[in-house]
Image (cartoon, rainbow, N blue to C red; front, side):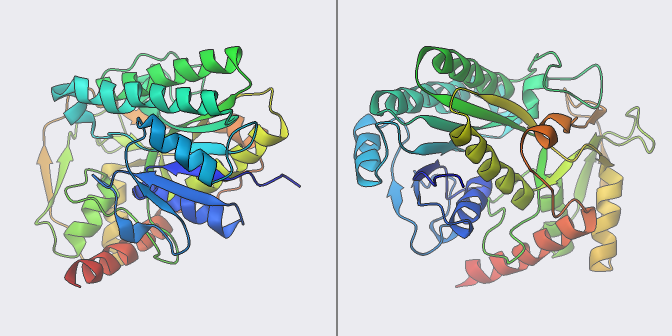
Length: 338
């Protein structure tokens, strides 16, 4: 039986972070959130979970949180989701990404080490691989990010590895593939305006919030010419974080780096066809040119995570992912009208 340490979730009012908060709370972990609410939403945090509105680089605030939540001196864990996540923006404003994703992560890690918070789960990304030469992608594939977003995350992984060797501190870096869907009970979901995730965009179009869905590139080396991606349900991803935390606590001398995906991919057109079937209507598709740096296919080799933690995906089904995203999109419309 794993001792349930208090957990601080950074960015816990955001998309993936809020699902992690639910997963922790549902499993009985003491959990608190720090979020500056720049891109997060107060309504995404469940009742009874303390919210500290502030910045993850604020050392004095972090020290107060650790004290109030019983963290430090070998107790407690951080799940770190806070950061900037829009790839094209990272290309046009790289310093923002190195500030928010790398420099602030350094400040957070430093505060954890100073207080003696021993466990750290990091929200990393398949963007660390850049354009892989081989697919599916293993954790040992070359890390050659092609944008500042991926590099900012890879730099944080490097910091964690060095800190883990120097201090009583272990970590798990989880490299996400394409996260999609929403909480099956519609308690939270992707709420960001102008989001670029394909399934989010598609369900917005299905509900009349967008006029069409742009398909960027039809000449990829894939069966139907559109890009293939590995879509993982956000609640399965959140569950992987909880299981990874248990693994860190049970073996404090071990750190982990693991892909988070299902090991199979769907093309853009297959995703849009799935949304059409779920909604029984056809989304207008607008064919456009490729975006720079989009690989033909990006699929995870998930054998390491399955061998390391008892992770059994519950929602590895494209129509289910679409249904949950659609249900949340409808509920979000009601929330925004209040």
